[in-house]
Image (cartoon, rainbow, N blue to C red):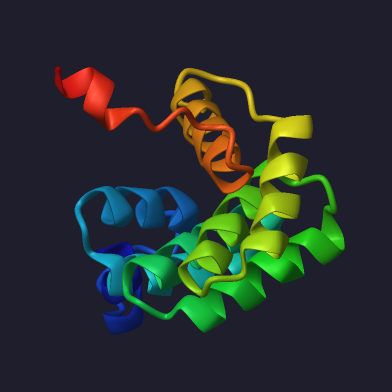
Length: 147
């Protein structure tokens, strides 16, 4: 880990560490605490960066620190009220707490301005299905599908 090497002084000063990219790689590897450390270092280099803050919220969620994750998502929304990632993440944290009304508002905000890109379709579909279920719009005829 670059941050560890830098801390111990074994990394050349001329090498610039991209803590954000390092954090993403660590998240993919399932090293959530290490990812959080890297993202915090990235945030020191770029205070208030909403993209970094969202990754911090994701890391918090993965290690079970859901209150911190929700606070971080809310912080992102204060800076960038239309942030689809923050609305999406916060909606699902609220659902876990049984706060369906608030979750619906965040899912609607997410779907009003959804992200673009190859991974977006999966998240959009998930949000649409969840919203439909919360509104009671899902046709749950499991008996018909089992026949």
